[in-house]
Length: 120
Image 1 (spheres, rainbow, N blue to C red):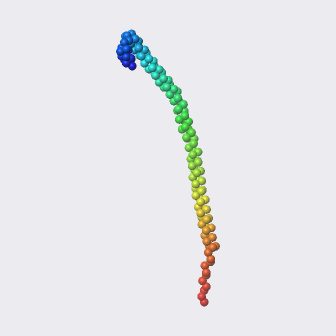
Image 2: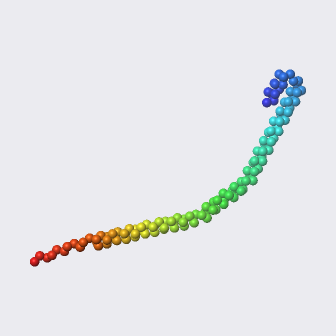
Image 3: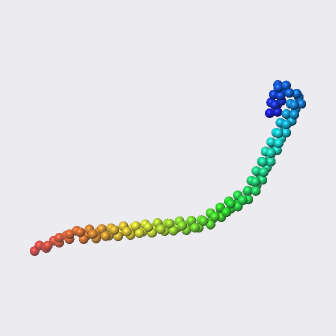
């Protein structure tokens, strides 16, 4: 950047002092930018370091909550399993009952078979 500015100034007919001043200002600006960039980087690093304990705390709380929830989830799973078994059993009972009623209805609707008369 400084070299390009110096070349342009030389072509434009500026004297060496003006060119040197521009070079110096360009160098000062570069140093200021580098300093600010380093300050921002350092500040970001400090903020990250400050946040680490909070992140660790949140991770620990999440792990603790998962451990606490595990027995409750197992209990809910067992209850769901029991409810499923009960539903299956009730379904079987209803099916058996319906089959029995169907058999009874069929017997009642069918005429009695004729009993053979004994031949003399």
